[in-house]
Picture 1 (tube, one colour):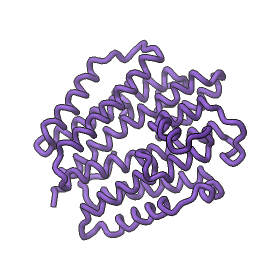
Picture 2: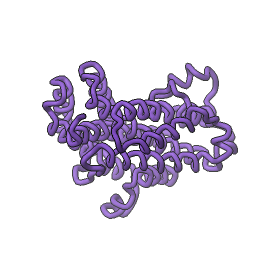
Picture 3: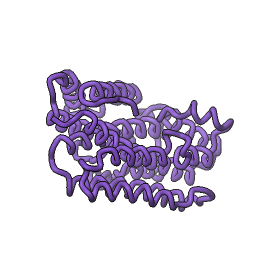
Picture 4: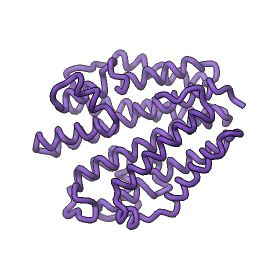
Length: 316
């Protein structure tokens, strides 16, 4: 059985890397939406909703009197004094990797260390919109690179399982938050009441979770809110969907099961069954926000229980 401290570092290394990528995705979709939203008030609302969604509105308000795109991006992307920024997440990922450097492959360590070193050389002030989008793409690429190196070089043992558990737990949480906030902004009266769809805004939402091309391949038709929700919640073959994330989570939790993890695995399986047999029409009838809020509660519960069952800490 792997030492809990080693498992802890591998789990949080992958969670922080995924968290940095997901935050870059959130910032990118809002930046792209800003090119489409002509009303400053509506744009500020979108940024405030993003801060609230990730639990950083209070911290931001303590530093800034007003919500504006430039200030929010600086705070969430580049502010080393904000423990929830992209810079801070990448630093935490590297520190967790450094603590278990002997467990990682040399390729994994070089990838995560070079990411941190490259980040230190990037310009962070006075960036144009295109340069900001390039930065967010760079963050996503570095996360993709680490995952690819992990897949290609790491022994399929418990260490690999804990990196995957961290990745998919974090991804499930992020996808649910992005979907909840963005669909409420795009269809404030609910998806059932949504009238004409702004193709470009929904395209930006799909692109933020690497789902635009997948949507066109699966549905081969116009974009509709219920299909966007179905793709990102129920499609097991969509890499960032809630179903896919929980499917991966249950698989790797079963692989590291111990004497005290039975209830955690049961709850993960129960959540997986909800997505496996779910129907989008019934979810919309229940209420999309209510469904996603409940999902987030259950994901947070799983994260807490994983910390208790396997790790030396549950902070993060």
